[in-house]
Length: 384
Length: 70
Figure 1: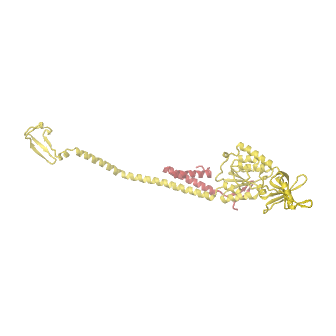
Figure 2: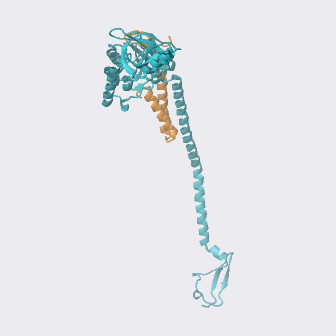
Figure 3: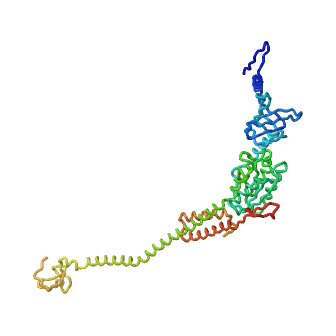
């Protein structure tokens, strides 16, 4: 950018604005870099575009004003406060309206955070390789746990949210709560012993680990190897409700189920009593209905059998009668009467039926049987 | 009947029984047996729901047993 000067005799004179702009554009060519220091005079307000603080040298107290976009600052969710030692990533700039040199902060990390992140990442890979986070290790949660164990810090919110949601869904739920240290160097050990103590409690069918949101460091114990292993090895299924959706402490990965809040953890561990009873009543209704249907079907089949049974004797008789009738017909067809009716006659002598002319001689006395009656006759002549 | 069944097991069995009866495959004798078993399971489930009494305890402070709505 060209910075214009005006000439007063042989003197080049710059306006303040032009000078600041010139210095500003020169500063803007400097590289972005990490600067270490202690946060002081942190000023953050909802309406402001930027967050301001002064970075103080850890050795000699030299100061550097820093401005950082508030959205960037808030997105880090680091809970930075005065006195925190941090690394700020940024570039130098001139606040031109006031001619103030400052650092434009682009990112920020609490001191040692990078190392902690790298350690967690390494542990995560190692445990994953061991299969600790494998899907087939996940146990399913009981539909109706006899007792629910809640492991939580002494913060009221997570515990209250969980208990409220549990008792709203299932008023008769039985919960055993263990409050323990959840942050600081002793937290991991405390969490492990509380977890073990809860799992040993009689009738505990599921353990919920609930911890509200916190800074990255606050949640560190939930990525501690001892805690992660204890969660994976717990004798009953574990639901992890630690931090917010975007924090994924390693215990979330080792748990059998993960909930984004204590309230949603409650939804996972207890059924809604009303819908459960509704479901049971539906099943009960179907049970009765289907059994009645089968009973009804059998009764119909039985009635049909009964009818066939009562009809059977007359059917049998009828069948017999028709057979007898058939026989009678056939018998009649064979009887000579039918032949006589067609006009034939039977001729008999004392010796029997005459079948040949040779059996009689002229003058012999014969009986002739007709279809109706008969007659006595004398043979006049015979021929062959 | 083994009363050691969990609520979940009892409900699952009840569901299977209803499905079996729905299919209509069972003959009368079987159906009656299934129905009796189903009734038993239903009573078991409802019994478990009815018997449960809300209780929130603090581990280590066992005396403090309160109804959740208290």
